[in-house]
Image 1: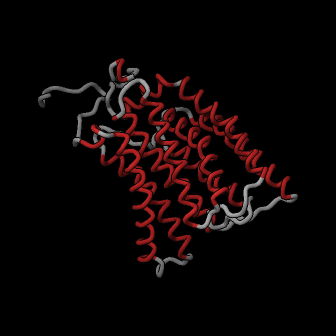
Image 2: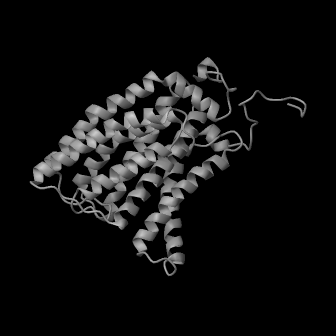
Image 3: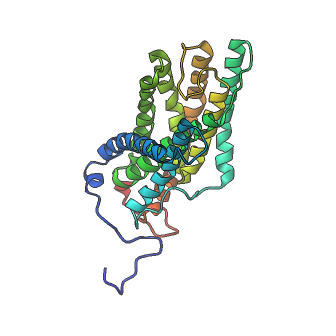
Length: 301
C-alpha cells in the first residue's frame, strides 16, 4: 500500500512481526504465562527492596501492591508490544449493565459458599486487614492480566479455525487452574490445593467468557479481587493468601454449586455470542473495518 492509499476505517496497518506467535501461538500462550508468573513477582520483590525504607507500610503489603500494579503494567505492555494492530483490553465493548447482571451469578455462588461454611463451623467469621486487601489486589489484577489480558488476545489473533474461541478459553482456563498448584510451595496442603485447582475451573470459564464477550479485562479483575476479599475475610487461617487445613464438606458442596452454575453460564455465553465475539476481537486487532461483523474468511471464523 503506497502513501496515497488509505486503509478502511478501523483497519490498522501491520506493525512489527511476531514470529513465535505466528508459528506456535499455543506455546507462546502457555510458556509466556509461566514466564510472566515468575517475572512480575520478582519485579515486585526488587521494587520492595528499593522502596521499603521510604514507604510506611509493612514489606509484604508493599510487595503485594507493587505486584498488583505490575498487572496493570502488563496490560499496557501487551497493547504496546502488539501496536499498532491491537487496541488493548481496557475498553469495555458492551453495556456495564450486562456485566453487572452476569456477575450476580458469581455473587450468588459466593454467598452460598460463605453461608455454608458458617453453618458448618457454627459461627460467622470475619477479619479483614489492609494487608489482606493488598494480597487480593495482587491475585486479582496480576492473574487476570496474565491469563486473560495476555493469553486471550494472542489466542484470538494467532490461533486459526472456527474453534479458536474455544481453544483460547481452554488454554486460559487450564493454565489459570494449574497455576494454583504453586500454593503448595507456600505451605498449602495437597488435598486443599487439589480442591482449589478444581474449583478454579468454573471461575476461569466465567472470567474468560466475560473477557471474550466484553473485550475488557477490568470487569473480571475487579470481580476476582472482590471475590478473594470476601473469601479470605470470611475463612479462618487464610490471612496470608494460602488455604491451610483440611477439606471441609461445605467447601466441596460450594465447589459443586459453582460447577452447576458458572460452567453452564460460561458455555452458554460463548456459544450464544460466538459470532459477536469473533467480530469484536477482529476489530480489536484491526482486522475488520468499523461497522462490519468480522474481517476474517469463513475458515477463520
